[in-house]
Length: 407
Image (tube, rainbow, N blue to C red; front, side):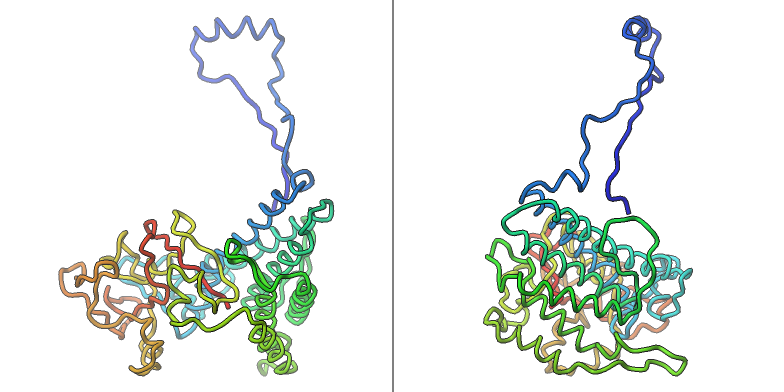
């Protein structure tokens, strides 16, 4: 993790023609240019960059931006390791050295395909968020801006959230609150849980109850309380002890979970959306129900690509990747009258933009089959697909503007 770096550049003459040498050489000799080392007149580092509100907000934005990575490997590891989702091998597609099957079967180790790739990336992505927060928090000690306490509170909650994700996946991890690059000892899971709780509670007084529409996505008291509620709900696991006999649960904190939830419900800021779909559509930034979301935009490299992961190659433009599916048992757990079943695509399929019937690569009508058979040799139509976050009409290629709601 490099927090600052002075850059020294060397220039050299190479592959120049004889005519050029005739012109350059006398000039070089006259000027005595034998040392071509350049030292930059200035450099940007955390120590000299965060001088005003605009620069601090720019640093804060980078910490928020890292939240997009929570929909990549943190999401993939969390979901594909369960009975909700699988990425089967389809011919030559989606084998990827066996990492998806490794995660789904929970056979991963530090050196297995899933461990070396997805799980390692989840660790790295979350700690990047921690490191960015630490850099800006450290710089804030030497700057005076009008909204300093609010920005500091946002950074502490963001860091706490990244630690929540780390603790959720990995248990005990090192707690780092400064910018020094050195080896850190591993903290226990209970210590990380306590750190998260303390950070959230300390930040709460300085967070606003809400933000103007132009600041949609910035953290509020509701977001901090929602994270606290999740922390308390899982306290028996997060503060428990793993022994050869299994998990020995820590103390239950049901009342604390109720209190944190009530703080959100009774804040007067949030209410149920008129239609549950509004929490997932391209304009879900307008939903009164979302407490904490990751901001996406229909811009190349800044959009949500969940549709691409799930849809068949012929269901969208550009061609999706035909990978992520739900298991038949999960799909069957919802009866036909359950509205939640509407997030799934099953049976005969259509292009999600035009509504026209779709065929598979062999020219047959595309029909999604709940049964995979052998997930190492799945057909291209195998598996029910999840379309919880529908297409954005203004999508830029694979990038949709739907925000991802954590709470």
